[in-house]
Image (tube, rainbow, N blue to C red; front, side, top):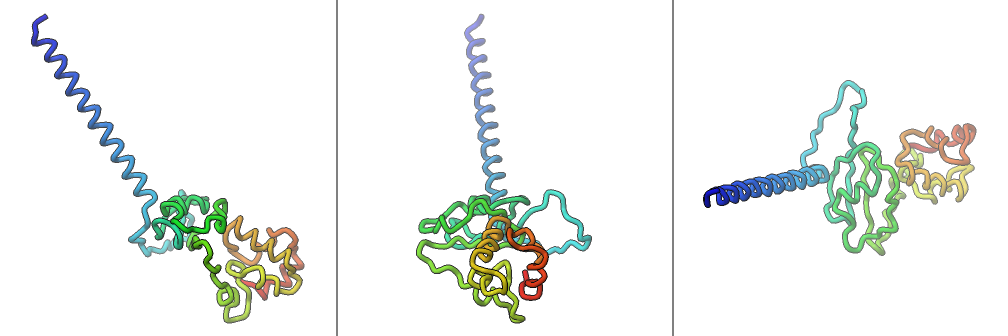
Length: 197
């Protein structure tokens, strides 16, 4: 064995190690880019409308996250995402966020705005949103007080309606009230003309 052979072997080993380090660095960079791209705010949302009316497989939700989060914005999340996913996509809670005021387990709906309040802030008034021009109560924006004002709805049932909305997301139709414990067909019919979504 000549003295050049160990030197060549060392060079090959050094070149091989340098290639492995470069490939690992490239893989880490690509991985970070993919993660950032998946959770980045949607700055340029296309305004295309589907004319087929068919659901898209692998559907995405668009959720506007605002308030006390690190990076407020519009986020595209997977169908079935929950509030915890939206808060994480927005970089987590900002300093001063009222974390206990947010139900992290609640499922999200497409087109929803999630507002994370600041500690000590007054809750947003739902008076104007809860009473549309036609006088009907909006099931998706009304607080328990507005719901309690409806006939045959007491404080306990109003609280159950609000709890159902927080756990399951927005009401998509008035008929969704049947899923609230304590509301049957007769009560639904008596409320149908008094509420909206």
